[in-house]
Image: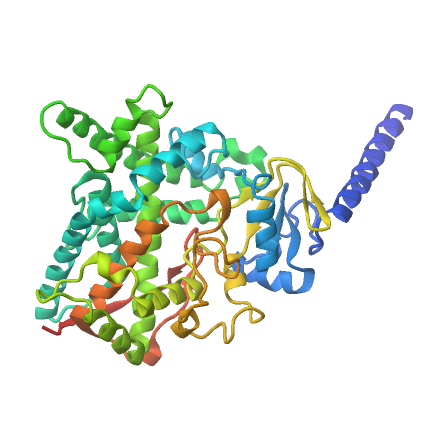
Length: 492
């Protein structure tokens, strides 16, 4: 009996000691909603966490603590809170918590999105900046991207003649995919007639769904070996497909380089870089980077294009104004040149407003504190997950007039906001050292697609505009719940 009493007393004492420590920690942490034992605030989130967190922040403040199972997170929901994390305390908050689904990717520890900001990460970012996003490199490969759009226009011409509706999101995905593959590999990897777009769409869709899905193994790490929701196994099948495809591209190119003149595209540049003995950049990095680029560079660009076209078809005056602007820079041959559309003010305003109202990534890829850090008046421990609710910031009436209205005019004029990470009211690509490195390419891809859709075709919807479904589905990206279908009518 005495032994049992001693054991029970020890357990009770431990519970009170932990509870007291937890209260002390919470006093230093930002405030937040009270959670339930074990599961914490899971029931507070619902199917659209970005919306639930936005509502909770209205009660608990711009910096808020939530607990999901064994994972404690701090959520930023205002521009000042985002600036504190992404700029003022950028170095201390620049780590990553790797989701269990991502570990299904072979060599995920070499993926620029997930590795910590160490020397290896800086080497990969340097390669990206030099061989993908540098203006000179993008200009050099401009003709390849324009050729992709020419193929898209031919497909739309034929669809119009048949009076066939087109899935604009799917077509935009195929165009973005071929533009990325031409930039990297100097070749198309899909046709516009393909139902599955060569397997890419299925693989990307799978990964966007499972990587963005609630995974009980992430909040209770002890369950990771069991993979209870089969998420890691689903991700592995898609990642393995990508791994096989990209490895095939690299092997083919290595063989080609021994025989004939090089293409001079991004893959050639990365291989040259890896053969430089002064770097630790190798074939594993190249293969992993190609997977990252095909994932990040296709879904977000096509998603933004689909939402932009949705809004333009719902607002004929905006559609006409954009067509008039684009028509002024089109050459006598009727061809839209990438370089001439990059600075069109209304086109840029339409795309920015689309990214604000229909943010592709509502919750920026989670950060992690690398050290204990002071965020305002709060102390956040090392290894705490940090979430920036960019969706909430972009729709906050304190910073945006009529935030739920699509109004490109708000981005017109000399004082308009930009998306390069310096205006914290508008963070479609994040900010700081973890900011998306692909902005220059994404800008070109989306601008060229939207301008081409608007200038070359009128569009008819299969239903009245009033019946347009504007709902979305939460994942890593916010997708339209229903595809945008429209029939192109050539204006030639």
